[in-house]
Image (cartoon, rainbow, N blue to C red; front, side, top):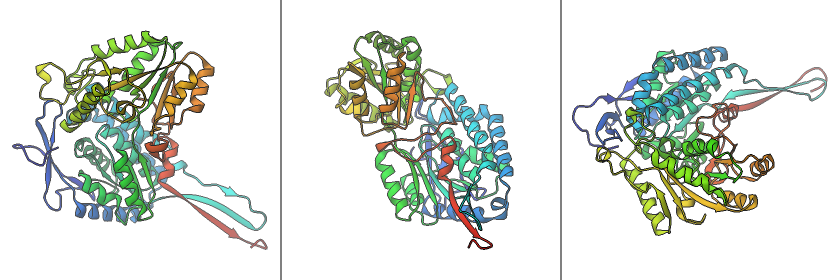
Amino acid sequence: MTSEPRGELPLRELLLDGKQVPAADGRTFTVLDPSNGTALAQVALAGAADVDQAVAAARAAFTAPEWARMRAADRGRLLNRIAQAIRAEAGQLAHLESRDVGKPLGQAKADVEAAARYFEFYAGVADKLGGSTIPLGPGLLDYTVREPIGVSGQIIPFNYPLQNTARGSAPALAAGCTVVLKPSPEAPLTPLEIGRIALECGLPPGVLNVLPGDGETGAALAGHPDIDQVTFTGSVPTGIKVAQAAAANVVPSVVELGGKSPVVVFADADFDLALGAVAGSAFGNAGQTCSAGTRILLQRGAEEFLDKLVAHAASLKLGPGLTDPDIGPLVAARQRDRVQGYLDLARQEGADVRTGGGAPADPALADGYYIEPTVLTGLTNQARCAREEIFGPVVTVIDFDDPEEALAIANDTPYGLSSYVWTRDLDKALRMAEGIRAGQVYVNATGVGTGIELPFGGYKHSGWGREKGLEALASYTQTKNVCIGFGNGS
């Protein structure tokens, strides 16, 4: 992102109260194509005044008859229409996603389908959010109802803008909430398109507002006194600030703050089955995935797997997203520089760079934000490159002897988002699944591209609360208890 315009560019405005409008102070920023650094679009930059207007619009829409009195079944039908409309524009959305964040076109197409599935999934549960009765004895009727929590403020990152827009807004809308969503300044284009599509499908004005902005915009939203819930995905330091801002107004939050996910590969694993999944998790989306398995714990005696992984990483093709390579660019120059800084640090820490290790030599890629897929060995679990989230196509391989040592290393991290275990031994698989402290444990499977239906969230510094699946609805509803006495029971 840059604040300086570069020639005549299409202007994308805020989506506020059902209208496309400029920022209140007229500010804009330029979105760059990460494959070559050229200007892609000019986007309105929301400020605190715009956040105030959007929250007011969302509050009014929450109580307006068009939304508040809409039958749950009708909300479900509306979400289904949005899902169908997303699929109808799949080609255009994938093309825009690929250009905006550098994502390979095939991955962008998969993200479009995932966005549609989120709306489809939550459409199916919109009219099933029932309560229960509680038996208190004769003359007393006690029951619970689940009511929408209200206005949801959602701050999403740059790595999966289509998916994250749908992942947060679909369950909120299914529950009857309204949303003010702030996409990353490095990936604002497809979230604005989802907002447009939702309006064209009949979503009432003000129910979904999209405000591209920077850190100041996010701070204004997280700390706004008239929102009822905050959802944030991003770094630990920013997540702490968001949670503190929300807590100051006694507002609950869901925060997903990244990870350093272990991949435990035992010597008895099916290496051919594991290879594609492990590499896909680590290098897919250029490593810019919070649940990526970037800390590979390899049992001694399984060196064959390391050789296969190094050869596979070296064979991956880099290029602009629209050419549908194996790996596209990182989202921005600052992200490329961050990853390169970690690679420089790894060498200082004594790492053996088995493949990759920096920017590609191909002059055709020189203007883009590329980093080669990299495999590091020779580091312990105490090295910074083994403990800190790099958010690039970089894996660290650490040896272990037995399941107890693997479990100790896997849990020796401040994070606890995802984990992966590869073994043919059911006993070892169950012991690892029981012992790993993480929100997700995948055995002979990978979390990348798996279910909309599965709850997603972390332990420890990876955050709290759950997104995806039925569990996400708990963040957007609250329980009211009603107790009625009659006859002689009161």
